[in-house]
Length: 91
Image 1 (tube, one colour):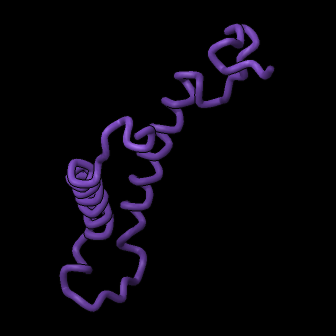
Image 2 (cartoon, rainbow, N blue to C red):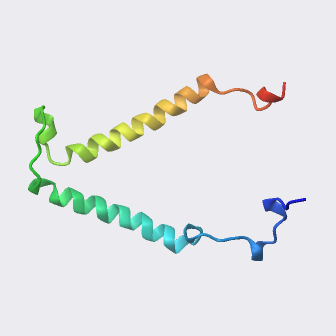
Image 3 (cartoon, rainbow, N blue to C red):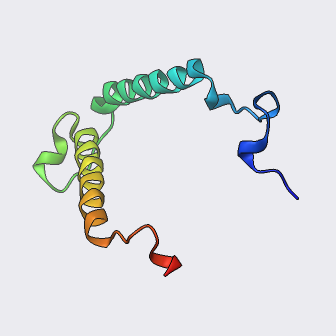
């Protein structure tokens, strides 16, 4: 009979590189640095936007952030509508 994850002793459990807090911190700060660098080089890129708002400094980053937050909030609202009871498939 195969062992379940909770039955495996802690010293034999496989560890991944994101299990270490210092690696998570490195990834976190790397993303911030990358976003900052992309924001700094934005004036050097020739944008071909159809609307005047697309030429504002930092518009695309701000738009992406607002769209992401909107998707998360929409998903949370849909969860309340579509959520089924925990024993839905057992009935």
